[in-house]
Image 1: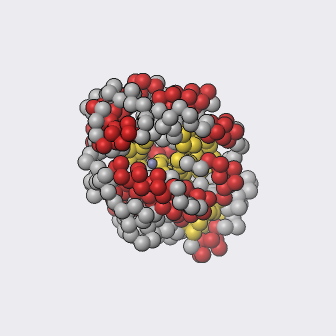
Image 2 (image 1 turned 120 degrees about the horizontal axis):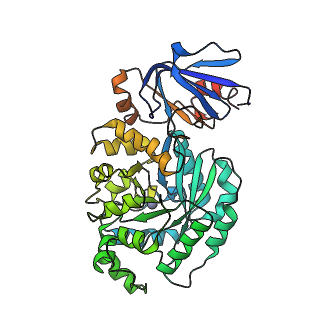
Image 3 (image 1 turned 135 degrees about the vertical axis):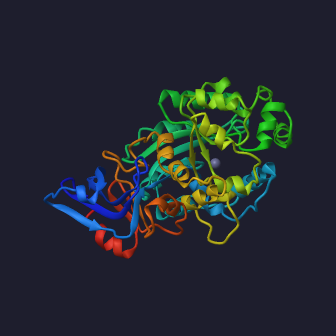
Length: 423
Ligand SMILES: [Zn+2]
């Protein structure tokens, strides 16, 4: 949209998420930002305003996917669901030795997210060399967390050079972060070097922690199948036996505040205090959780402690075996609703909480003045009291999606109306 052009979208319902549902509402967009949100009758007549009435729909902020692995999208349906975490790791290591078209996989994953209403994503990048070429192929607002893995001292530290080069990239809605893969796969010396780099360049940090019982046993008790397998592979196990994975990571490595922790399924009681003290953000991935048949996720206690919990899709390497399986945050919300009755809490996890975790609080994940105009539209003609419920039960693609005020996806009808006026 040119800077002088202003677009007003009106709808039966506007769901800002950061404030209550508005019946007969509007969202006024100027350039790449939201200028005003309110009730249609409050809208003042303004010259040059382009008005689009979207009818019986809900306009809501684009969804925030706080944990994905786009480059694993083509690994869908290759590994059947298992409760044996070590055998799953072995399977994925074997699969990664085969010819995977990571670029195609990443781009397909990005398209799936865009079409199903995601406008911001935290992606873990296992093939960062692809990024300079493909970064701009997707309009998604993105933090690309470059993954660092190393089981022995003689690791290839090229990845740190890539991070140094990429972090200065000057792309409007893309950022670089850093992701030591996890405690068991990133040995202490490498983890320290990675976190040092994160501090030096003020990069956001994400890590997988306490995903499995096997990982918990390895660090807490120096036992279990993961401990035995990694010891056999020659990993130095001297960092085990200092407490739970959470305590080992936060107490021994002093990471920056606000780390984005994927999973956090297996926790000691006092781990929750550790997470709160370090202002960690937790990403729960319901379909991946179900795939592995995990025994616990202490959601209620985390929320009670005031910890920010958001939602992610994880990768399709740990997704159901159904044909045409896609990355879909509406599906993740629906799956989590089996456990949590309150749909408003779930929608917040997929919007405002995700935005906070990614450092975009007030900028995306909610419809408010000065936020980026990242919003989506889904059909709905029911009651105001059921709007949140309608959101989590929406199936399929969205009617349209705007990122930075630009039309990026939608039905042909909306394309005709919005494409020209938003470019
Ligand atoms: Zn992951």
